Length: 437
Image 1 (tube, helix red, strand yellow):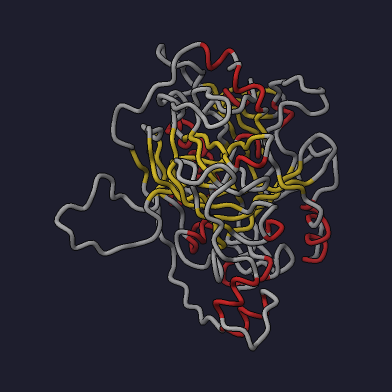
Image 2 (image 1 turned 180 degrees about the vertical axis):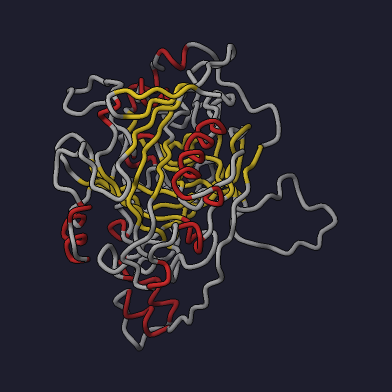
């Protein structure tokens, strides 16, 4: 069991390092005072605002976060990559189960959908969707007939149903400068979110490129909007409300190094209860209580080839205001299409850019009734395997990387990471808020 020590007012949870691990399996975390603005912030606190309009004004200029891998670096891998050759998962993926939440009844009015997308009443729905840019984008430049072929589209009309409704837009305030930024995050318990490490912790606040592992560099504030949609009112009148982040956590690899394509750019966050929901019955509940939460892989998540659906709120699609989806095959431990370096993360084709960071990569999305006698090689549905981490500096390649939740060879110990956050959740919200792995 990991030991817990308090350092400068923040919880530093230290795990044990396995002899075969390339990276420490420790988890670094920061607590906020419950139901109160963070005292660590250097900028204005959203928690001190009193109206929905104040929230809208505060977050309207939030910047979509994008981590870019320099093309030149691909021909000269860094030290962490040179220590050992990437290893494939040797066993079947291990999964912690999710929960679908309460049923939601909704009536979709076609005229309302057209109006939300600026379409005229005389247009057919298909034409309206095409005019709104909702048609598929089939592949990136130079990626046709390759592993990096993809299909992007908007989640339409709204991410109302499970599992899409567990995904939302994450707004956070960095310590450096006090500015607000956006990523994507997903519920994996009633109050626990999974996202990218760079969406919870920045080890370079005004250090001019010099990374510093300091607990004071965690985000100073943050809010999660499940099933976010500009068409539903955005941050001012969200359908299902928002919850304030009470705790951040990331891997020791990201905390100490901040390297891209190292299979450790993973973070967790603990959310408070919902507030400001247009549907009042959601206010005061934990976000996953009614909306549900996703199943996730915690061991053997990095496979050579895996078909996954990526979800996110990238700023280059709909200004980040609507959920978008990218479907593709993802590969790991293979030469990438740019520099030929062996990748530690999953890589794949997609048109998504900044703001998609932290978004889930899900296997077998949705539901199906299969009468075939042979159901296939992997039939477990709606499981998160990775989170979006980085893109290339040259946008023409339309390729990104995603960190698998288990790292390269289960060296992240995501099970320990989740259990530590779950224990905090259980102490705060009760034993039913999450189940230990």
